[in-house]
Length: 258
Image 1 (cartoon, one colour):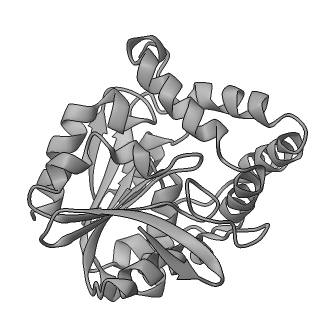
Image 2 (image 1 turned 90 degrees about the vertical axis):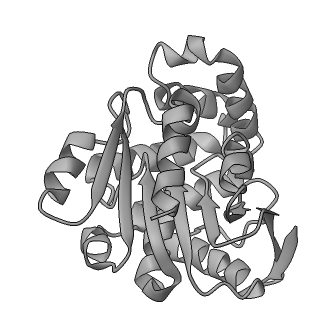
């Protein structure tokens, strides 16, 4: 389904009935990343997966898509369906968007799951890597995406889940260059939102992959110790919906039914 938003199109999928769950994909992903999980969640809930700005079938709005910009697009879909309160599950960049939304309109958030994601801002090294990647995206996009994709899976997972790896890579390669650059620039600008998450009056869960090369799980665990933010560690990497699908599905069902 689509809605018109700022003279552009936002695409989303909707399945099931019940209390709403909003699924927010990561960088270079689309709603398709949730295909294996949505059938289970939609047995008892209304599940809405949204293509974020410049990804999938959703248009680009400009050359910088801040996490706040993306959150406002998500809020537009919620308003269209008169949703006042929902559980949010955000994978990687989708978690950054969920946190931006929680800061803007905390009353919308019944629960927030950061899945292979973080409340931390980019450090200077990460910002520099994004700047270099954006320069490369203009001239050598396919190689850039292929190179960056390797780090998303634990080493053995690339072989064990070869078909899933290749499918996800093909979707990533279809991301428009403008969408890549705009999202990357937006991620560089995002602030640390630890206080937003800590103070949020909602169920809160962080999913950590022990072999995740992008997220420092140990740092997150140390930071949330003594708060009401819960966490679960899985055995593999950044792509828990592929690498630890069964455990993830079980824990997400448990999370949204709290």
